[in-house]
Length: 111
Image 1 (cartoon, helix red, strand yellow):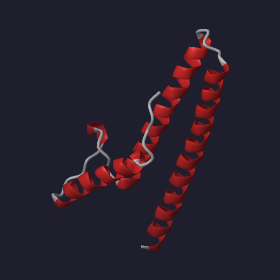
Image 2: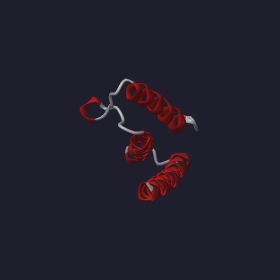
Image 3: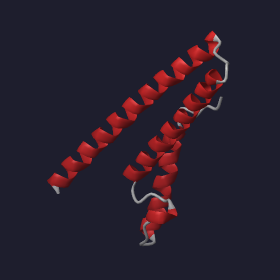
């Protein structure tokens, strides 16, 4: 089972932000087909998406193990724990996206 470090999202956002700052200084922006992020908000969204994808993969793998006859209680408990972790991550992703989106909307109205 693979784990994501607790600060993986922060590291991803930091790298994306530094990358975009350098491109902004040169007068260019990244984004589109290149896979780069056009803003730190997009970088945050991409980081949450990658984190949720990784968690979904963990759940799918555990589910496959159980489906192939590995229905020991330890596997079932592990699947339950990973499912609850997915719920936690999903709720936090949604909350952070909504909060930042509302803050950006407020900033946009004030300018």
